[in-house]
Amino acid sequence: MPDPIENTIVALSTVPGVSAIAVIRLSGPDTFPIMDRVFKGKKLGTVPSHTLHFGTIINAEGAVIDEVVVGVFRSPQSYTREDMAEISCHGSPFIIKEIIKLLLNQGAHLARPGEFTQRAFMNGRFDLAQAEAVADLIHSENETAHKTALDQMRGGFSSEIAKLRESLIHFASMIELELDFGEEDVEFASRDDLRALIDKILLVVNRLLESFDLGNAIKNGISTVIAGKPNAGKSTLMNALVQEEKAIVSEIPGTTRDFIEDEVTLGGLTFRFVDTAGLRESTDIIETMGVSRTREKMKTAAVIIYLFDLSQDTREDIEQESAKLQDLSIPVIKVGNKVDIAKPDLLEWAGQQPDYLLIAAGKNENLDQLKEELLRTVSAEKFKTGNTIVTNMRHYEGLSNTRTALLNVIKGLDETITNDFLAMEIRQALHHLGTLTGQITTDDLLQNIFSKFCIGK
Image 1 (cartoon, one colour):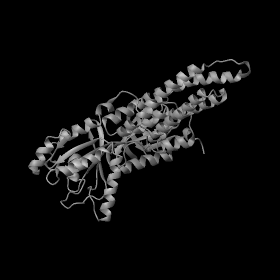
Image 2 (tube, rainbow, N blue to C red):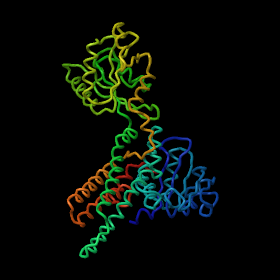
Image 3 (tube, helix red, strand yellow):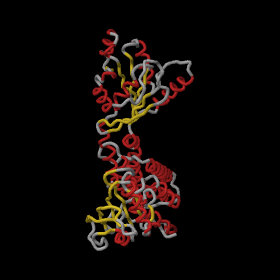
């Protein structure tokens, strides 16, 4: 079997299904010979790069499959740095299938998931971290996620790693040189300078590692648990926030037995709201399990919206629950619900509390204030930082391994270990940094990364 990078591949690059237009992508050395056999119009093998051409796609019997517009992209000025063609046809599933089948019969191979981007990486279009950012960019669902992925795709993260690696490579080469002249007692690399460099690199690595919680929230949404007693109005609030009848609303206590989740974008950030089972003692086994899972979910939340029922609860109930929430060490927004039917004395007391919000979820009253408080609580401005942010678990693990190796270098310097052991730990740090951007790769690593891409990208 020939090396896949020598083949010409084809795939649908737009979403499957009926649409006005679909785009079929072809990439590889035989792109234009294949197109010239099926496309009737200009000879695409002779036209300039980055041009569009109208014509028809003809099957083996000479029948027209569709009228199309073909984009021509010549190597190396294409996404994959190979010859590429993009066929814009009508979005009929039948037409798409017939064109792809025709191209396969002409010698193209069906692309694997992510193979176009993998070829771009293999051909030096960008490094591995930038390639992964392509998938993040496609799946970005809010302004901040889009900006973060775009920065990474343009090399923001990669440039930071490249600087760290370049500094380490210099010292590694000096230590290796000392090993070659070991018997002559010559020092090419100052231990004090190496210690200062490792400390400096660790500052950057630690900053990147600390950014992961922020990056994970940007990428996957800020987990926001809506908790409270049964009938406090949690499901009503959930429905009001997502503007959809997502959760069943009933006057019967204990209706919600498990989690209900949905996402909403506020201020350029995605909040992942979780409606939970009402917190109370119960003899119902299923409800008890739901309450237990709610308490566990609250421990892992980024923010908790704790809802009190101003028409039913007492001041003692509210103060008791508020005290319990403080033990979680998680930001809590305390919300009094049902102001429209609240007990007058409780409403007056709650209104005097500086950290309580008062709403009527069923009537959409004061929900804008709640949304503003959510953004304030998560410090929305910190998400708009221009600093490099780590959003990828593989990058987090690689940086963690790098830190471990660097700490071993410091330990070795403190214990005055020999140069060969120092060199080994520095090589380990360089190895882990190299895996982040793809200077060091394995087939299994590439398969794991690119198999998660959609076909046609």
